[in-house]
Length: 284
Ligand code: FAD
Image (cartoon, rainbow, N blue to C red; front, side, top):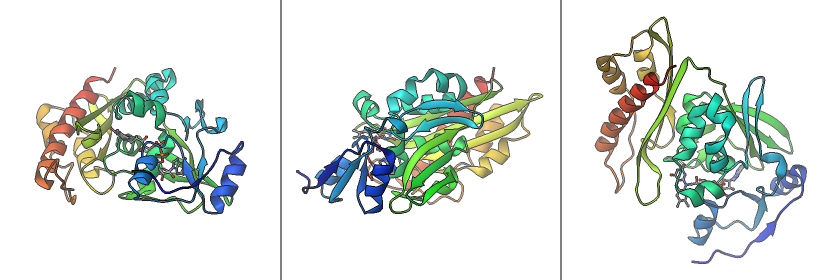
């Protein structure tokens, strides 16, 4: 299908873009989700503002409070960044699981988090990393934690006229082990269930556990009960199974033609056990 006609603007500066967005225009980034939705007439914006040409949103850099990833950074650049691979490997690993090479070369981190597909990969990692999402509009800047940013299916904390400017992730030292494990929906590459784990051991015991879940429910979330079950334990196979069994606890699981709610819950337990095991094995 062909989309409804629309005006297209490629602003030269971020301020110009924000001015147009304040007047009701819609941001366009990689177009990997927005363009198909427009072609299917699920959305019909009158005016698109192209953010991908703005050089000042495309960066990955280390600052004192973490690694800052500009909104128009592609999934491929996140996956292949030496900085992220060395200091926040969960981000690089997660990005490498997104879609296929074409999608990774066009799609952006800002577009993915703003779209908030309940089966997208980044949200699991951002929850486990306790990442911050930096937003900007003509009214100014604000920073929202990942757990507050993802609200519901295709729903975030973004206000009208506001964009995702960057995502800030922590710098992890070699005492932290991470893993992202996902059951792929083979036609699209999206996660039927995806589990991101970040663990630290101190004196032979797990002193920190963070678990982000995507694909299971309407929105990504932190599996707090499973995290608590791991903390203070040595990480034996039995302890991992006990914690993994709590990952879907109290969650209203999604059902679709790919997986029933019960099967998704079962998958979450299986993939959580795999991700915890792999993350613990990676602690240097
Ligand atoms: P766009 O499609 O341009 O925009 C998406 C939405 O975000 C629009 O509403 C747009 O207005 C808004 N937006 C864009 N940038 C901003 C910003 N900076 N601030 C505020 N709003 C903004 N994703 C996965 O996670 N895992 C997968 O396995 C996966 N497989 C895919 C397979 C295929 C075949 C396709 C087509 C997509 C797949 N995706 C997958 C989605 C992909 O990651 C998209 O890149 C992503 O969802 C949207 O990013 P984008 O840059 O293309 O944004």
